Amino acid sequence: AKINNREIATTYRRHFLGKEHLNYIGRDEGSNPFVLSLKLETMEEADDHYRVILRTKEGIVSELVPNDPKNDLWTAARLVKSLRDNINNVVLQPVFFPKASELLMAFDEQVLVHEYKFGVIYQRAGQIREEELFGNRHHSAAMEEFLSMLADKVTLKDFSGFRGGLDTQHGQTGQESFYTSFNGCEIMFHVSTLLPFTEGDVQQLQRKRHIGNDIVAIVFQEDNTPFMPTMIASHFLHSFIVVQPIRTGRLHLGRQRYRVAVTARLDVPFFEPKLPVPAEFEAGPEFREFLLQKLINAENASYRAEQFARLEARTRSSLLQTLHDQLLCKTQDFSGSASFVTGDELDDAAATNGGSSAVASGASFLDGFFRKALSVKIRSQSVESNLAKRSSSSASSSSLTNTVIGENTPLATGTPKAQSSKSVNQGSPSQSSTRRCRYVPRLSGADREPGTRTSAYEEGKV
Image 1 (tube, rainbow, N blue to C red):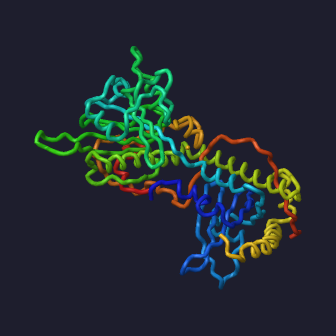
Image 2: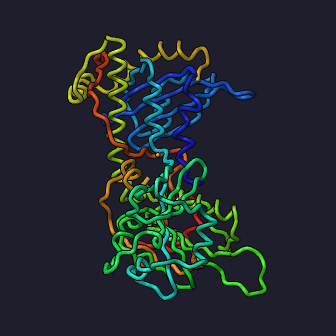
Image 3: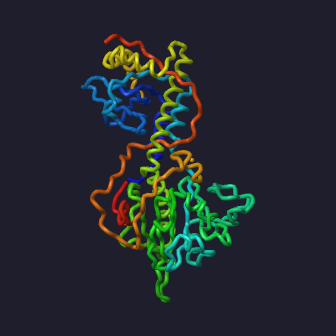
């Protein structure tokens, strides 16, 4: 499936906000926090079902769970268990204070990105070194035609849209660039030949400073020249889309056609839309839409690579803890009827009383509350901004596959598969400090270089 975080990230806004539902906070037996939202819905010509959102350190899961009246009544704890088998002995506490929905929406929707920046590198025939690629002073008319199809050329001075880290006041990053909007997202392109050229600088660091910090880049080839992604040393670049104009005879009439190939680091999962066979396109709106969607999905997929995923997991866990504590503290402040203890005290209390007893006590409390409540059948940059949402700048230098334009090779059977479309990982915006408190319920006593692949991976899916 196409990588698309929006559907799950906006589930709470679309299905819960302004409608009767229940929210809970809890911890599993490992004292890991989670946050649950649920509502009972009635469907035409179908049995009732529960719509459930479970937020854990692994990400967000959203499910529809049938409510069979012939079976025992679902409880909140059973719904948690049905979504995450590894969560046992849960202790749940209801969340009830004004505007709790605002915190839940903010947490869920922080993964949504509306601004993207992509590199564009010009490769002349025979150029095989990084210094040659970044050393091109100007690009060809063919590349100008391609970019004009993809986006609009804008003057950077006083540009008011998403600037992607480019200088819009003093002209230090060039005078012009290419910008477009697509499906509610703003996209700025870092075009190597439009960034300032520095005399005497073999590495052209002013150019590489921007493109080398992008996650995805387009390589526009003037002629049939092999492109090896390892030409460019970068901790951040994970995916490349290689575009080459197809030369036609003088008598050929019609639009320009292009050949496309894709390469990515091995740990980047597959992403749609898939390349057709042969991977050739005619210039026009359909090709533009394909490329822009491919670029966006490539970046979303790249953030699931190991380098970024580790950083994301740590941040997501911290943000979930913050959300849990905020919901707990605000509920306690609003009700004025709970005690505040440390996490160690919570663990000690649970150990003293026994996990099963905690569940029994929690289930006893939930039974009356849950049955009564449900009886009426209820139911955003640049690398600086995007990586601030998902990761930090430390990275591995895993190699990439060599790509020759148009190459198609069978995919190795051991290629990792993508994650379920039902799960979406949280990003990592900067945290706000918050009061830390926990509630103790009354418990009863009871490439083919190593590590690379070619554009043939397009046959797979995410």
